[in-house]
Length: 410
Image (tube, rainbow, N blue to C red; front, side, top):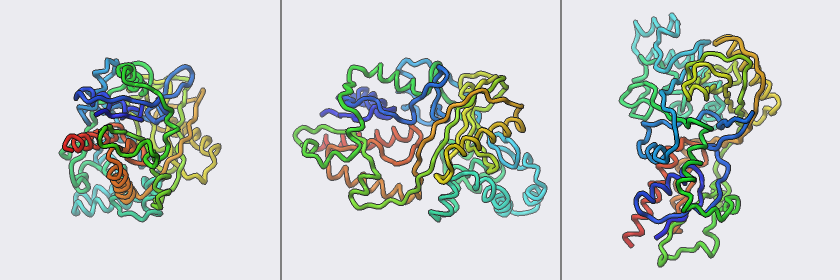
């Protein structure tokens, strides 16, 4: 049996390395394609499409597969900050830091559940929610529950005294109800895509690059040459345009297409920064996140920053650029130190937003149907959303090994 991987991105490369470690024959048979784990060039330097770093403790196998490639990395501790109520907070901030007498009085005299409700009404459900386009869509268009439309806001923006009210289980960032930053890794040279480049060097003997990914942006298993052949028992790990394929099969997935702006900004004078990133929960700023790539390499004084913002397609690109430049200047002048922008680069992306839970079930069932109909198929892109590389690799690996186990029992 051989596994043919039509995915030359980070998850495909890691899958190939994992298979080889387990003595399972495999080949990557496509050229590298554009993906958001790539980097781009600006002013003779490499930059990522927004904040990227490997969370070391999230999945030890994932990190071991990458680090054993021989790439030189810089390890550090993430320093994620939050901004709302005109203040910058470290994660796991205290109620006292908000300096809101009404909230503090409620916490001392009332039930914690009532304090949490008050905090939500004054902060989370107003200015913070209004600053994030995805969350507004989940609430106002898709009509999801509060738990669903507060994704990525809750529990990040909840004070530590009230977190137990919203942490209903364990997760990587809040395991055992703790709320501390985790260890991260970043390439010593170049951008995040250096991880992919190093893996390609390591796996060069099994990479054919015989096809262009664009040729396979559809469901290939309607073609005769990819029909089931149980005698060969080969597996094909294949990318599928899920939205188009489902539409062709009469499955309608309700989604809204938004824009996403990533701006890389050079400033004239270096400033001192300790944060790796800041989540901005204030709709007076045209900013979702600010990140500091140089801090990932343990630099104290930085010369450039990255700013990200998701926004509705109703806003023209040129207006978005002006709003972001203005917001960034005002934010730093008020909360760090005065800056002068010397140069900038812009990247516009398109992003699909859905009812996350409903679309997850629809897509999982559709992939299951495809893979049940075609014993040799494993869909490589198992979501229509961009997600953490650890999660996409873990899900793909599970699907591939389940198919391998099934083949071995035939």
